[in-house]
Amino acid sequence: MEVSLETDEKYMRLAIKEAQEAFDSDEVPVGAVIVSGGRVVGRGHNLVETLVDVTAHAEIQAITAAASTLGGKYLTDCTLYVTVEPCVMCAGALAWSQIGRIVYGASDAKRGYSRIGDRLLHPRTEVRAGVLAEECERLMTDFFAKLR
Image (cartoon, rainbow, N blue to C red; front, side, top):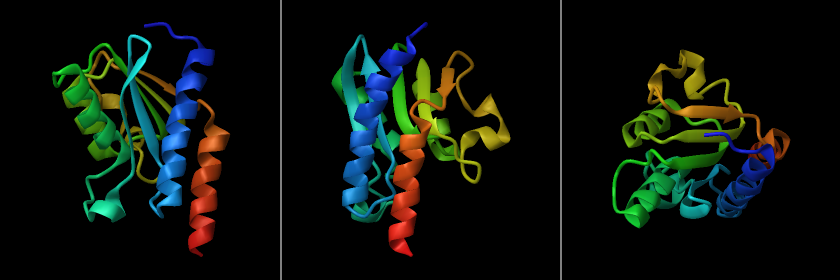
């Protein structure tokens, strides 16, 4: 599934808007959108504090919305755009959804799935890392600076 960097940046900007909503609500600023056939079918941002639910990550919110929109649990023809590398929990959920592609901005050396390897993802899932990484990282840095 060959997609231009320009297209990936377009949808990553929507994910950044979701992350900004999380930031504005005092949530860790991670945002996600899921796209299928050039249309956003799911979106979400962290709601962990709001829902008092450790599983309420942006990716989980977006997966649930996309599955509902598309009427099925498999997202094989979809791309997830997320501002920060998915954690192990989200990578597992993405594997179960059989997502076709994942595009993320900032890497997460402490909690990102890649620290234990790509084996958590579905074997057919394609990954592009580092799209608008600086903007994504800046949101995280600003958020944690605000907490201090």
